[in-house]
Length: 422
Image (cartoon, rainbow, N blue to C red; front, side, top):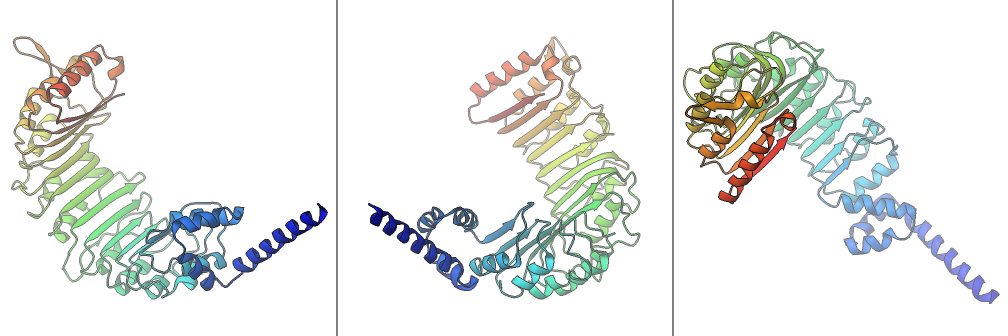
């Protein structure tokens, strides 16, 4: 009995020695062996120990063509990065948003080893600075998408990236310490630009989004993270000047937007999203934009006349999101209902009124009728409705709306209704 026990213990020790020898193999060799295993084999390997369980879970989770380090308190050593680089040699996407990873380790481990990398995201790395950001161009020269989030670098560093990454098509800069001066170096290959401005930073006076007067931006998103109570550079006029080929435009979380009529942009504009506290200027454009298919807007200082005028600019819109936020005094009236009925190609309607008061929604002709219910009945061409009403639970007409929508659901089974009464 004792002999059997000794043999069993010896066998276990030999297995552990073999395992330790295996995991101590050079990173390149170990990763090559693991790459040959299919997912089923990896799951067997997972049961060996706690460390192999953690490693296997990570490998299986990332068996796509991407490697993502999310925000975590866990330190990741250069040796671990070396292993992952060897294992994920064919990745297309590398996303590093873990502040415990050193940027220098990333560039030293990955430099020119991942030739097929097309997407690079660097976020929340305080070790990524003006002194070393240029290594991105050296290590990942062929990337087409660059995302930088909360990285302490200036305009000149970003401009240098634009000059040295010729394949760039998509750029996303989120709360990076730039004033916008760098955008004059955007190459003609960049067609998609997302910029979230830190609220404490002022945009430079001579901002330009086109190099040598040639702008190829097709999709632009501008957002202000923080309080900036003026539109000092008149962003609408800058967009109109430099983005004549734009197809998708989003202006989000701004306090003020001047000269909205200047957004009468190219005949290619297909999507427009405006979420602003105050808009100034003529809501009527010089000419309608017949190409626009998707429209979303939330303007707090909007009134009914401006709303009706604004909708006339987009006669062929198919997807409309209309928000009446807290502070907006517009309510659903007969004139607004008619304006929505005039959108003959409308297929999707999202309607949200955070200020909903039931008594204001009744239209009186021969008999009182609830405006929202009437609108839903009349929009027979719409196949998807999303309705959100504030204060509805404290309103006596909540049941009336709910029962009317349930009836419409039974009458139009092909139509999708989503409601939220908050």
